Length: 166
Image (cartoon, rainbow, N blue to C red):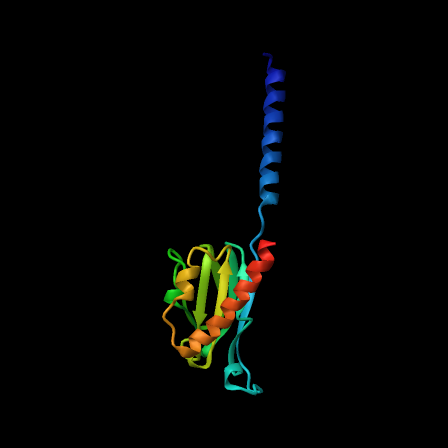
């Protein structure tokens, strides 16, 4: 093979390789960022609405990020051990105006505000598919107020499953 033929083949190989690399990069989905605000609503008509995560429910894809806003003062964000996938790193956020949590392990994630959980300040995030820990999460040992809130959140999950399965 002559030198010009070798150079042409090499050049074509580099171009094809670069095109394949670019196609792979552009087909990869960029991770999304979802915000959850922690609020104290002084206009709330019932105590359950006074302290809240807004929104308190998301269904996201693995490697998406939840951005917790306003974990300051008495607001915190803590993982709930019975509603947390095996292998996922637990979280404990305090004194942060903004804090990003990347969730990559599929399953059901429960969050609470340490101080305001007694008022029903909980959130539920489903990452990918809920099956890895859904039964465990539904049967988590929770006190009455927490059980009531999570029963409502699991009803949202059940409704979403019906629409996602169709």
